Image 1 (cartoon, rainbow, N blue to C red):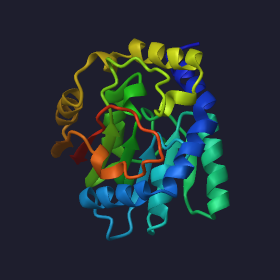
Image 2: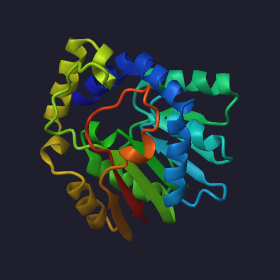
Image 3: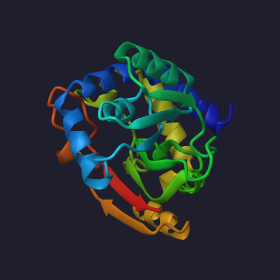
Image 4: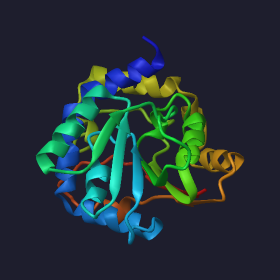
Length: 235
């Protein structure tokens, strides 16, 4: 099994529990907080065509469809996409979902007004190739918001009250093994990401070092004790 197959298998296994967490978050104060943060950095006052990369079971996608945007979510995990499509049917949502590789987007150049991603790039075998693709399908002056964490030195454990508390130890070890095998885990982030976007010709690149206090508003949900940075890129 190659690394991409291992990553997909891992997220397929996590998909049902992940879906439960995201559905809870959509109903929580976090959803309003996330929308407020996105609105500060993307021109959401007008209808946009948005790509949610690594959508999982559809958090950003459903959040923004509620506000009149046309949103497509993609994920490499078959089970994540299946759960997202079931959610869309249950919500009577206009959101659409496709199984797709974040580094090989099946869209024409300059298709989207904005691209969003959350908790994805630390698991990509080739994030530079992904960033190049995201810029390709983004319209001129379009915005990328990438939320991620520098998990490179982290070993995932079943800490009580945290996201991984209910996850099998074998699965957590697999997650750590996958992470440690990826080149991105050896980089200092988000400095590496900023340099790559500039190298790829982005017009503007800026950073928020930690958005947790802005979006983690529900004390009943579980969170990791690691900073969540936001990279904002303008093409």
